[in-house]
Length: 298
Figure 1 (tube, rainbow, N blue to C red):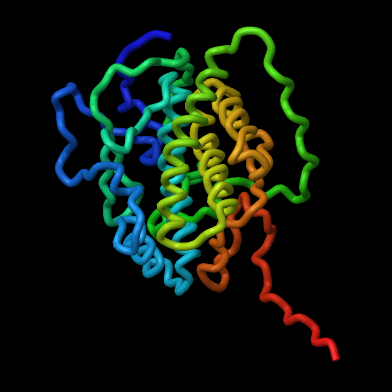
Figure 2: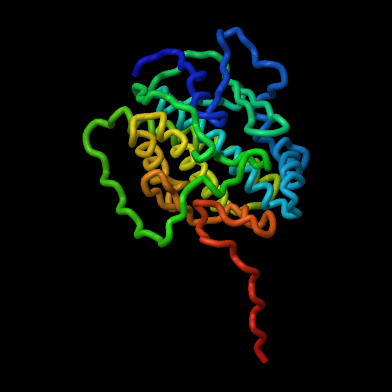
């Protein structure tokens, strides 16, 4: 491994969900309006996430807090996944975003702003990238939980029929490659760290199935993969995502096929209102109808 200071400014070329601001020097403090990231993970009825659930519910026009909480979680998970996977693929490192050292700012609209202090960080693998280009409106963009963030319906193509599960990858033999080490760090820092703290905070605000939130996280990771596909050496981002999806808690949350993903759970987006539809990677191909009443036995 080599050491150095990653240039996180390069991530913003992929899109706003990938942006990560950082201090120019070790002495630089977070910009005005930023709060410690630890506060985002706080629990309680007056926590930032609990307040945000109410805001998202109002904007979506839903009376179901669990629907708003799931959509909000999906957008926040997309933000963390984009930064983590983007840095892994383009810079060869995964930013720790330590809750006690990193900062967050929640704007009125759009994805949250993230800031991390200046520091020399190990580069777990050499960066690989293709010439960047601007994302177009037809490229998949993670949903931020607000009407202005787009809808999740375009995150992945539908698969018309379920595909048989892929066989497990053979156990690695010999020395681990740099990409395998990078995948381990991505799983440890992103999945076991940031996404675990986020899911716990959301569930403390609104009771939701842990499996639903795991599905949201996997969906967000796959969405980041599709955005990165045009910015990196083909196959590298997918290999990292596939490695992470093979490990718990995201194992069995869905099937990754190329850069498309079909999850085994539903984020509840279809419950926002009539005509909303389902997400492109939903386990349903159309919105579930109302439950039929159980037959009465005489």
